[in-house]
Length: 247
Image 1 (tube, rainbow, N blue to C red):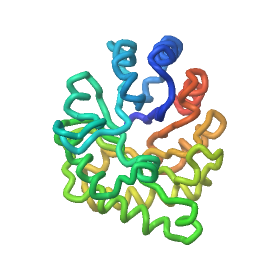
Image 2: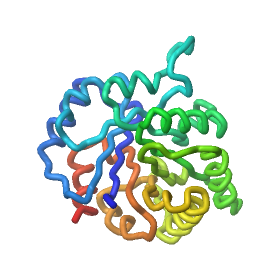
Image 3: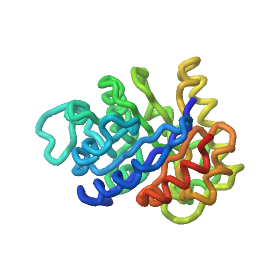
Image 4: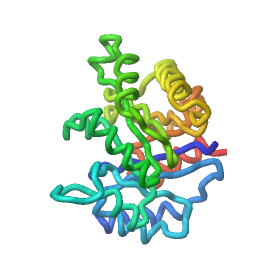
């Protein structure tokens, strides 16, 4: 199975910067065992689509609404994204949970709709520093998985991203032991929930992944990819990570 490199640009870059990014990035040779996702601001998706058409790079939206249409001012329809040619969606990122108050029920609805529309999906889970210090990591992860994946049927490519909230954009990185323990917990849950289908689900690690720690983290058991924030905004930095974990 391919090692996944998923870039989350968050609310960064405009159309011109997006065009320049891909102009540089597309000049790099990507190892065959790497699969790339780019989750970029919706306002830049048309520019990005024009840039990557005909390549193997997959484009994703950072958020969707849990209905395909209606009186939902300011929201983004997953049906429209699919019609545009968008491949994937990112659901449940800690910033959506924290700043936009998205709860497990809402995230469950989004996951179900994304799968119904056959959109590739990466579902984010993770604990805060307070929860980690309170030894509630397992409890939090299992709760987010159980509630988020409730009654979910897989119809398209689906993956989990483990992002310890305390390691996102802070420069802090979970130790390899902490990553291995969390990913083992998630893998066990997926086996019980999806049986043989769980083998197709990669578990990504996200949390201050950089060129200098990518290789060692990629060798941790059950790490099948990375969800990368800041380090993915610069083409050279992202390429260094890709080359570090490539064949």
